[in-house]
Length: 403
Image (cartoon, rainbow, N blue to C red; front, side, top):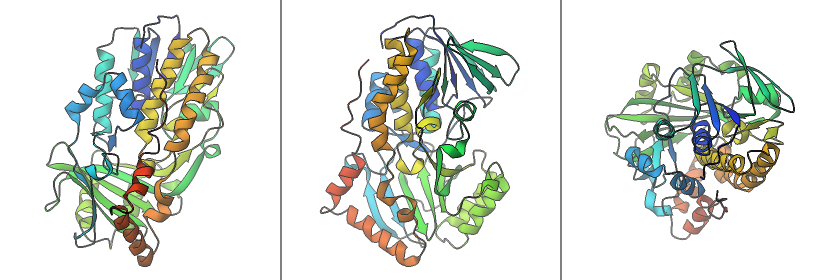
């Protein structure tokens, strides 16, 4: 990105992948940038994410690939097993040209975030990065945005970028209650780090499904640990939010008869220091911007982890947003309009749920489960592989803007 030093002062709410990616590009454009992150420090680990198609192109343009290669996970593919651990079908990474359930470039969310933070630290510019801070109030007028922080002070910015996740406080403050924009997709997902169980095939993501639930293991960079992946199909229960004990009890109840390594996963769950649990939501905004406040990443266009495109949407959106701001720093209204126009065709494809969503992934009966397994087996055959390739390459024809 060409340096276009301006007098802009921009606040980014959220220090995740979306927030840090746009912060990096704004710094490179000479924009005074403030980032606030509620967590007291960067969050390590997290589920594996991938770079493919346009998101890989963005990572290359941003000069991130050397750092990504440093932390890249070695995964050979995905296997589905039955309750005794016997294979149902296997999808090697190369089967779909590195674009299948396991892509050729996989990295943990925390490691990708660290790559961005390293680049930010090496980039000269006017940066104010605040951990343990968040926004309590936002008031805007024609000349700027007054932001009141949890620590007390009120400061003015030319633009606020909300990159604070699917339950975005920025979105609620400016656009309205979450229920206006978020659609419950029928279940919950949980991830956490645990010791690698005995007998797990190295370097393979291994999954096992029962009616309404699945449990899986994904390898870490350290072979002694792995990531547990749990998906549950159930009615929404608002009382589960922030109640870890209730979340873990629901997991225990729904995986009680799962077989395979479910007992080992359940035994490790209470000891996990990075336990994550949240509902599967889709976020659709009628507009990504309201005046001098705009949204980015999951706060703006979450498709849920089931799409496998959350990181792609975050990093592509960050690249476009920063590029448009840098192109016309004196015309933020025009920059935000162009950002929305440019990213929308990509989002329309990236947010599509594969194969019918949770109802297809987790049927409610053994009969439905066997039917889903049959479909999975067919997709690995030479006859049906072109259908799968079309599904996993849906965003490849997106024309990424050049800045």
